[in-house]
Image (cartoon, rainbow, N blue to C red; front, side):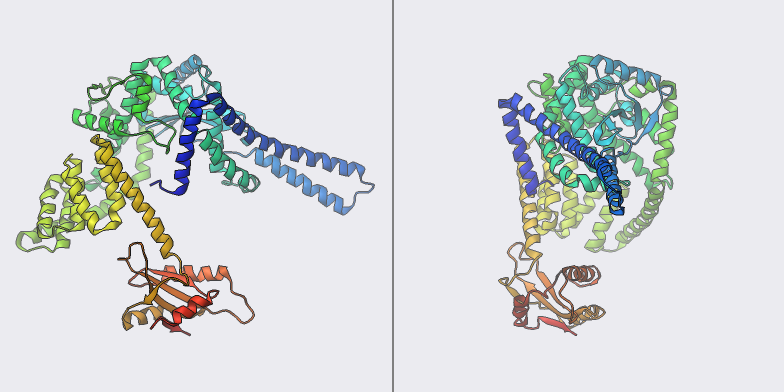
Length: 634
């Protein structure tokens, strides 16, 4: 959850920039342009340094009365340094992943892409890549790294073109190519390219043998790229609206709007229904299905059940635009098109297709591509699938045993919950509900039963689920954030935005508390209130036996620290005095190594905060005054 101070500062900056861009759009664009050119100014500076060094080398050679060994060494060093500078500018970025389609493999696809590119005055594409994502996108890979000379890649997800009609896919194409279009703002397109390029460079520089390049550019990229991306964020979001208008220019408002809606609904259907049903087969089949993508094609040609379609439509409309992504939410994009000026309550959207874009534009080659992705997916999931199948058979045996035992004997609460959980997994939600209710009739505050029952009820749009999740949270604060997120998503889908936001705020406030608690528990200070540990002799003896193999542990103190945040969860501190040689100084690095080793290897009933105190004599003196604090001395 994005509740850190940096995210708050980012949100504040975006809010200010939106106001500034609305009041003074020209000045805002001018400032973004200045920032964009600043990146190139740094590149030119590097080039200038390289050229100056080369000229210096030549002048050094020409003016030297005699070329000594030191001059030769200096010259070779400068030549090597210039080579590194030039090599860093021309850093090679990895190719986008995907199945490369040749023109002869997909002539109709290349034809429609070139047609839309021509209409939008967008650059032609050198490659089209077919992927297994429900997505489409444009990638511009600079052949010369920071020096530019772009090669254009169009990424097309096979699931996406199986889900959309040919005309809907044209709208998606127009949107993606609209980012590079000459019909709308060339400036926005240029900024779009800069954001994409700098993002890829900072992601990939230093990888695959580019460490020298990273060393040269690290300080600049770490400062420049995040700030440039933040400052151009408002413009990038407006670029999304401009790209939507490109889709309108090519396919019309009605088709563009319905495409946006279909993408939102069918993505959810694919993840929550299609793939969920595919992976459920692991319960009965030892190997994954052979024709997953072929079945996907058939599924998208069928009509989505109206209740499911309406549920995913409501979920799509419940989303709000935020600063996690430059893409606006569906509702805002449709309003910008003028498609739903008042509301979505009475919308009727036809989500069925008679012919998919994949069938239209891949034609006779579609079965070959389906077969390729069938095999690729099957090979990728085969090993984890078989492991899961084995684990499921074991769990089914446990469920059978518990069902048989329940016929004649009273199950413990733990056994009852395990039975309910496995019943949910292997039978149905309907069968699990009375088992969970029976647990709560015996123990109304059972955390796991309340939490699981609450989730099941919310899936059925029953608001009583909120009460059960609240009961679970009251007993276990560890699930507060996740529980609030579940309730938040449910209330958003129900259109209860105000109440949903209250749960989001509650989760955010709890997360801040967790951060404060972590900070409080990750240090020991002279003014901390410290108490005796309170453990039994046998527990202390067990801990000391684990400390004895470490020859550099001279003394160990164990105390309980009084904490202000979550005081019901005790905090124990194991303070170590490390053995240091007579001629050696205390080393922070060696202290840290010992702390890490003990943290990883000590086995104790409570979590311990372990700290080496060699440089903190005042704290050690305070520990010496606490009864039974010293538990180990060599």
